[in-house]
Length: 314
Image (cartoon, rainbow, N blue to C red; front, side, top):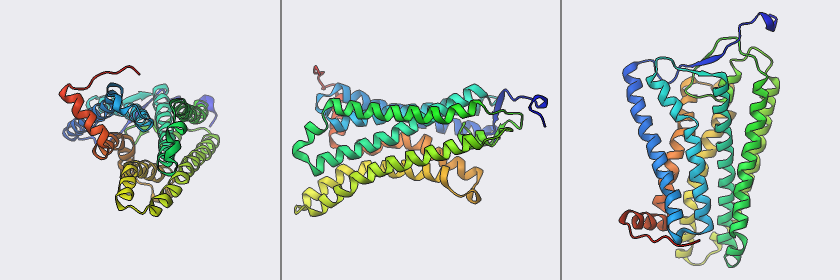
């Protein structure tokens, strides 16, 4: 059918997680609690790092940027999700849908590279402790984080621009709670080869590069730890890395399953559950994992809550 004879779609309809009004209200309360916990937990880490001079270290600088990316990642999805759970019109315009997808890609990609920078930080601290402060000085940390956000911006742009050329003529129902590339491309009635190729190529490159950087840091870390003679030293080194490894596994595991599983394993419910895990639950869990495992963060939070922290000039 010629493109001129096709009706253009101007908005999409989210089918969401349920059509039962009572269940929707319950889900609204659950995800509102998760979102507030995400904002509060990650915001607390950012605040305490700025307020407490004891946390003016490279690791906590990177941790605050991880918290910021978690807030951005969750905020790209959850507010609109909460709105659609209570609204009768569960719609989103095409432009807003593409914008939501852009910020998901930007914050998600930036986060995986911040995790790679944090792996390099642990490598410098454990494998070359004598030169740690000169290796991870403030300027270097700032450039590495800026590079992570730059790569995230390029990744988001490269996948968003091809979508602007797609034509949508119906159906316009997204069997999901957010705009993600697989759901959006499936609704297009024009050729999607370019979009599919760009997404697959860029996602594989981003995944391989960031994962290689992370593994390239942790292989010598593990070798160094195993050579330590002191059991206490090994335990302390493992403790400093375990939080980061848990977050890396959560981030990569669910993301790779969502976008690179075989099409034969496709399931709407499974896709939604995996998306909830990496885009909603993981940003909430990250500050809990780090605050529970990091003695300095816990001590700083206690000082802040007791009102005994003293602001110090940087």
